[in-house]
Image 1: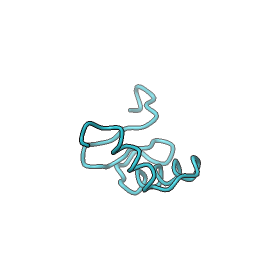
Image 2: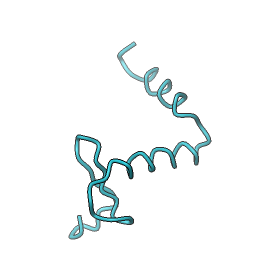
Image 3: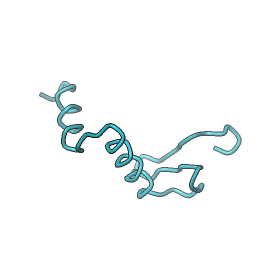
Image 4: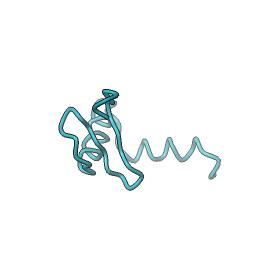
Length: 59
């Protein structure tokens, strides 16, 4: 990540690597990024979940 100046990285288990904070894998950083996105968009998490569900073929 340092060599390529990656903005964000992560693993399949939910750990996020956010170099602006530190280079350690941190699931709480992932939670904070999602909450920041919801606050910025001024939407509730449930609204996003409903939108994602209605946009899939799982109906």
